[in-house]
Length: 128
Image 1 (cartoon, rainbow, N blue to C red):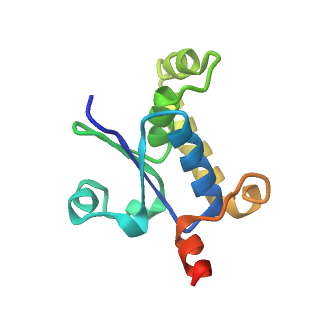
Image 2 (tube, helix red, strand yellow):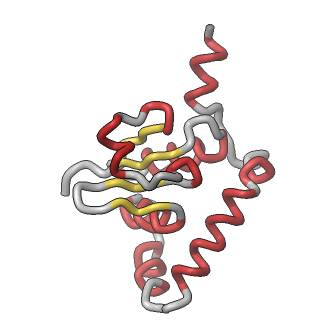
């Protein structure tokens, strides 16, 4: 498989923490919204800034599906792969996964008080 790219909100500390978590445990390349190339942007949905995306040569997974794909690529340990594969067998899983993703995205400011790092968009501006 060629390179997989995780596209994320690089102005969000919570999003950056998770993107860096996955990148440190996988071969995912991180690309923030502000660093998108025209070619990569064309592959994303029109409302791409609403969630994260995992992009491969063959597919673009968005929102909760992107997290699923990142989990499967990450070397986290334990039964993560088995759990994701098991859950994907159920018809309601996709709906639940996306609802959970949306809740987390809508509460990322609050959740960011626990898991956060300075996002790239703010690292450079604070260095000036």
